[in-house]
Image (cartoon, rainbow, N blue to C red):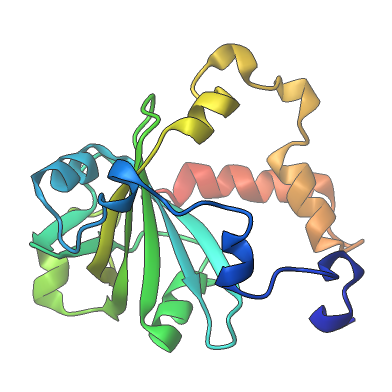
Length: 214
């Protein structure tokens, strides 16, 4: 079923003008907070963030968001508007890297534990394997084979309302392990191969965490 015949998309809004019939224009600080460089406040937040979510899309517009994590400071600010995220040992799907190679754009969301306000950086992006660039980055485990380099076009903070509403940082609101499917159970269901058992997946995931983080 194509997107044009998807019943849940029927009547979807098709223009910014239609959106603005529902929503007012931004005002006050929200309308003025966007900059095009990494100022001292943005640099401080990047240095404190142990995780960044990277949004990208392929040439056909299919979107993807993936987390990248490391010790605070694993993302390096190269100059006033450019930063670099070192690659780390992963599953070799290369979803983000393939997308960036195809389209040259990425969006970043930096998150600091316990803090509601996040930092967004959107801009042009490239995948680099230049030895002199990689040598200046802080590795996440093994020395990186490549780095995602982003030149900021838009830099701005995002308000904490989503974190306040979700009570994300309050352990009292977290679901118990018993309420959640295990990571292995989810992957086993998604793979859907009758020749692969849940024990096989559990063993593979345990080995990955024990031996492939570095």
